[in-house]
Amino acid sequence: MHPKSTTRHFAGTLRGAPGVQSAPPPLATPHRRPLKVADPLADELRDAVLFLRGKGRPELTQNQLLDEIIGDGLARIREKDNGGNLFPVHSKRTAAQK
Image (cartoon, rainbow, N blue to C red):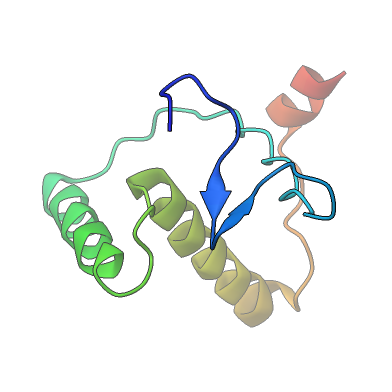
């Protein structure tokens, strides 16, 4: 396939050909803020990503895994300490959204 071609071959079919359904458009990349993570945790995160890439998640990135880990941890804290409710919004975030 030519490097600039937008048509991809999948299992003997042409993507975009009549009768072949295209994949949904990719989700927009979320805005990211730099967070500081202790070196040992950053090293373990990198190791976990490389391990999981070999276990069926070949395109996993550190940002994706970090989002999963933080999301799971926040959900656990919400359940345990806040009755499953969302946390109150901090006043600086509220002001920034206006």
